[in-house]
Length: 455
Image 1: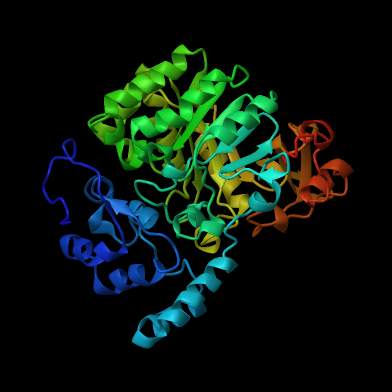
Image 2: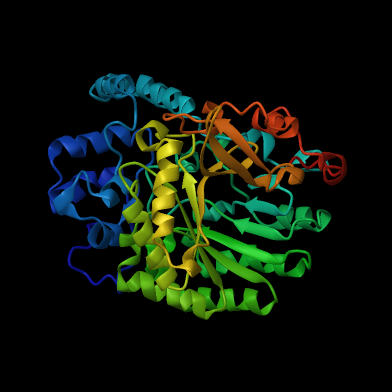
């Protein structure tokens, strides 16, 4: 299919472009040959997908490759090690090395920690001794649900911690064939009142498919909040404005709200430019008009948004659009983490400087936050004491509910970018220390796991 040059974005129908469209994209936008071949090579390992809206409305082609939105969706040199990139280049140039190339790609992916923080080992729930496909249950009140038809996105972020969902390996993918297991599970676990429908991106589904996953939840009285994790407002706002079933999806949202539930769209915005278009602002307005809430989150990543000014502009744009700034995450320890990571000390400075620039009502945001094995760990700042400098840390959420809200300290480091690079202070309580080291299970196992659940 040819690229949609010159057509109206409002009238455009969605079509995704992958690595096999790279030459067409490069010719249209003048991508230099060296950059084009780098994208082609790295995308053999990391997923690459883009669409017309992102290409024509978001990327500043006069600034590539440094443009943050180009960095956000096009794989770059440095996302893999120099040795791996060189090895791939040699094999890709050999027509007879296809099998070896495929094995090399698999080996590199395995080294990129495709499922961090024990997602496969610790988060997969069971019923009657059977693991439930396409679900995760890490925190007592919340279950994650991955509908099988929603395990792709309108475009792929190069830093995405769920990159393993998109590479075609069924063993690495979370995907539920339908909602039956989910409904049975939440009925048997009434402490779950929050279901997060995630992916991928559930909003790639048609409204009727999405309806088949959401409506059964409305028959479970203990489910009080339905969340939808999506980047569609940033990457394809037409989903809520001009797509063929845009009005239908808004009516579905109204139905969920009318049932007495909170419907929360967890919107993923990485840069203020994603909120700069009329289509994006109209999409948010229409979503909010259904009674749904919009909360916004994204990771702090190098090359895209690693400055206080960018975050201040982003949070102000979200607040102006009626959305709630919610989380600044730390880039997770998976995929091309070394390319995107920002040391925790610098992350804390960026957050605090950006936070100070916000009006009081926009200071709802929390960060920087690591979604680690023990739970969501906030870096609240740095404390200088006679015995040295320490990070002030706090568990905002935890596998063990008894640890939620608990503060603790870790020795300061200029270079540490993840919790496993920190040394807890000597005064860290033993239960917190055990959780951080992964040696403490949740006490809830004795009660809520009687059905075979693993938190």
